[in-house]
Length: 212
Image 1 (cartoon, rainbow, N blue to C red):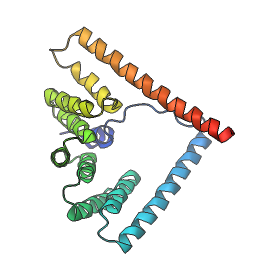
Image 2: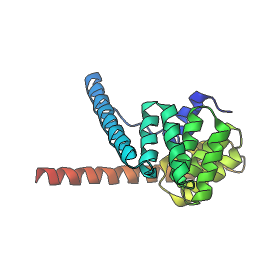
Image 3: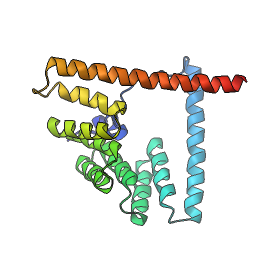
Image 4: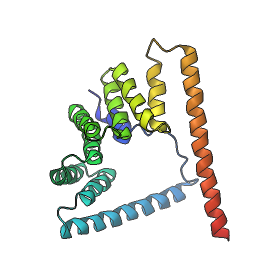
């Protein structure tokens, strides 16, 4: 079983291993964190109000669970997910979210169970396949992990997290040659570059509109 630390850095965030440069100074970083924290607190307040007025609002309970998970309140997050699933038992995103939460808590078997339920509820749920792959990888099942990464990529070819996971997995699979691995790396780099350029184009377009 994976440790809590490995889980938190792996399946819990669908292996968010891409480095995103932070603010340039400690003061800017602190300010950004304060803004983010304030926005989360405001979102939690609005979702709690929604649930107070509409106790059977499954989407609000799911989203509230996400907010509490991000804030580190795992007990309350779990309560929200379970309440949401009691209202809407087969909702794939909530099933996946609960699987992620259990993985963070080191409950790997439960995490795998709920991620599996997510893909059974929606066979097109790419994120859940990636998370299943991470869980199987941590159990030593590299073939099963790779199969799930490829299922994720068949649905979302530009899922960089799953690409990174796949590139790690193929290094342990004897059927992949050095050329296979090289070509997969080049394809990943091309996709990552394309996404970066698209993001830059959107940023420049937004700036143009702002200046006009």
